[in-house]
Figure 1 (spheres, rainbow, N blue to C red):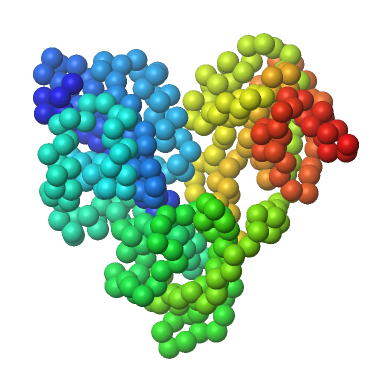
Figure 2: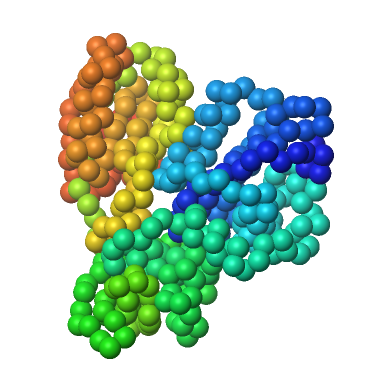
Length: 377
């Protein structure tokens, strides 16, 4: 299908640009009068256009489930955008990884646009778009977490919004490439003439190694903008030290699946959950419906996880969460919906000093008790 033969109807994007990702939906009508829906997942750190789905007179339920699957874990709401803004968001994601288009379909008519990447959207319009696609920052802690996260992700456009008067300190840099901020701990220090001084201890995954980077950041607490930032100290740490730094208790429910069709129904009823296949089972990941974890001190990358549901090959369902309250809510919902009566049996509740569910999922065991027993040998 050629996009030049499509009539634009409307488009909307999630207000999650400050997280480095955006979900995008566009509706068209073609020359035959058919309804066309396009759904994108755009990543502005590393992957570019890393998800694309298109429906022509598609099934409404399938479209809704796809939208939930693509955007359900982003933690934002939709904002209406124009055609020019729609094209700009796609092109600016394409810049991140031009090869990301090669695996997608129906992009031939965008080729000319890619030759002049930023044509059609003035700088002022670009800034206004990003402002609409970013949350209102209400606290210094939220500002600092977003700032360190975006700088570590080498995400220049969104970082620009956080500097006072849009003036970037070009001498400030943590790394040349895009990496992941795993944890950020903030300490308020003395104030200066320029503003309030904060110390941030940032644990960063540099893929081949881990670094603990100490930052000194001055912010204008009235405008909630970054005035100055510098790296005070940077040290490489081992994977064991990084793991210890990230340790949090994990709470789990271990259940027996008594109904062979329960997982199928669970998957159908939760299209917003991300699904991963493992050697010994299948994982469903439920995210929080917002990004409130960015306001926390310390900030954790996985703070947006609500619960993990792992169906094993041996008929167990392991539900894990770093927040016991979340697990209690899941347990309550299962009981109120009669799931314990019809499909599941509770075996036990567990709490570990540090997360072990991912280790179990990556092991050769499909029974969590056999996995625990292997540790004792």
